[in-house]
Length: 333
Image (cartoon, rainbow, N blue to C red; front, side, top):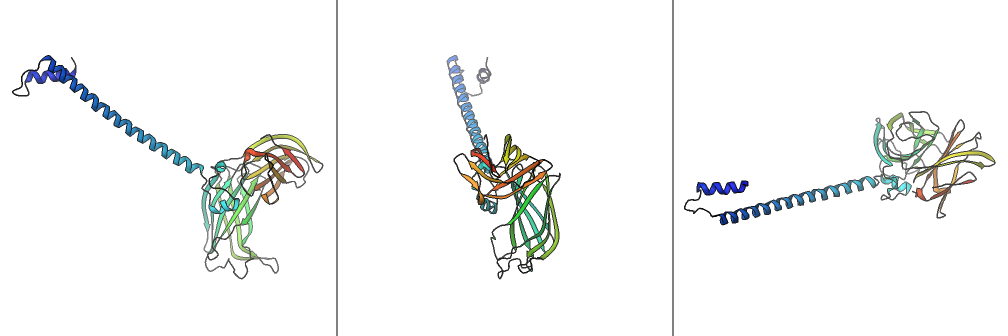
């Protein structure tokens, strides 16, 4: 006997409803069926409700996940970096290669804010903002050609490596404030991501047009360190080929290319100053001259590393060849 049968029988036997006649077997069966049907309907409604709630939760989670993924994949670069490198913010080839730093070093007269970085395996751009106290005139409207800069900049990694860097001033966003923006381009023959980098600045001012001497407006020494931490979006192409550049033999081991930098690693006894002169895409597009920025070559013992930055983002998968000195090297990309 089912639990429902027991309940019906109890009610019938105890005459809980006064004046009611005893139920016959057909009536019991009809009431039982109605009860089962009612329970079934309620159960279905509850399950449907649960299914609807679960579906809503799943949809919400999917929307949230898509939103989070979209937030992750869309570049969050500062507009100053976007404009300088001509990067489309929706370009996903650099997703994860950017990193917020926001490290500030300051004294009474000068503040340096290390804002953001954008890098790959061997190279990195570092955006910094310099602000002086209001009583120091760093924007002389009577001398627009005066270029403010640090007299000395040193950059070091936590481990010894052969490296090079340059620092450039960016367009002034507000001529009425006491802020200037700079971009450091740093490259090394070693992997730099995951390593501690230290920037050391000394005295801020300008070089005189009259005698070429440095005129400090703010005297001081400012040092800051942090760990480079971003996604390496570069692609390593193994070459392992002997080539001739200006009649000298070089063994090129590999080429690393990212959307913003390219580097080539070579071995030779020669110490000629060789550079990457051109990068050619499969459709014939060439990056050369003004398309290549912030380049340099460093050497250590027999190893030589030459690097270059692109003035605009390139499609790594479309790179066909790289020209070092007067030698073009076809790449199996």
